[in-house]
Structure formats: C-alpha cells, structure tokens
Image (tube, rainbow, N blue to C red; front, side):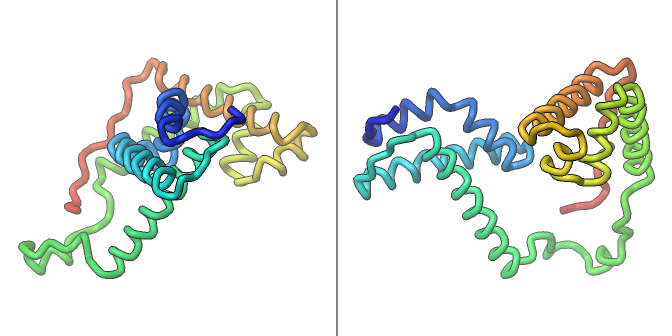
Length: 192
C-alpha cells in the first residue's frame, strides 16, 4: 500500500493485520491476554484520533500501527512506574502490622512445583538432538545474542534466529504433549 490512507483505511488495516498486532501485544504484555486487549484498544483509539486530529497521511499502516502499539506500551510502563513511586500498591490499610513479619519466601509446594517443572524441561532438553542442545545452551544458559550464535555456528544471523525460534517451538510442543501430567503451580500464600 504505497498510496496514502485516511483514518478509515487504518481501520481496515487494523482488521487485516489483527493477528500480527495481537501477537505483538501478547509478547509485550508477557502473555496477559486482558492487558494485551486493553493495549490494543487504546492503541487503535489513539492512532485513529491522531490521524484525524493532525490530518496525517499514513503510507504503511501496519508499520504505523505496530509503532503506535509499542509507544502506547512504553507510555503505560512509564505511567505505572511513576504511580509506583507515589503509591504503595501492595499496602493493605486493613491488614495488621504483624503481617510484615510474615515469611515472604515461597511455600514448599511452590518450590516443589518449580523443581518438578525444571526436571521436566531438563529431561526434554536431554532428548533433543545435539545441535539443538548446543543452541539451547548458547541462547539460554550463556545468554548469547543471535549474532554470537550465528558466528559460533557459522550461519547467518537470520538463520540463528529461526533455529532458536524452532527450538522454542519444539520445547513448547514437547511440554504440551508430554506423557507426564501437566504441572500447575500451587496458589500463592502471599496476598498482593
């Protein structure tokens, strides 16, 4: 779409590019579906009102909407950080002052759940082909960037990204289709 679009064209692009925008919002909000939908809604409202208010001509609506989504997410983070400096959201004015002395460590159930989940992941990694184990170690243990992984493997950076993406998909699929029962974290004891 090289021609310019009015605000109505943004709406059609919003519908066409909905899956891409939803995935980006889910990634930004770390999988919080409700927060992602809220982010998408406020992004659409602000993007369309900006285009109508300033009579902006949008040549690449998908890029414009992705950029607006990112900016809205950053604005929300800044707003939350400034609110946290002013308010203490964890404070319960009705709670007894002795609650501060409560044990803030994770419960034994939660620690056991974490250990079992980690053991499942490790068993799954042990069953991966050696090349995938190497990629896992470089990316998630050594925390190497894609450029370093590509240089180490002698491949392009784009191919390194793709292999890490494939590795993540393999791990997700392996955890979802494992013969063992799915582990569900126990409810937290802490209020907050």
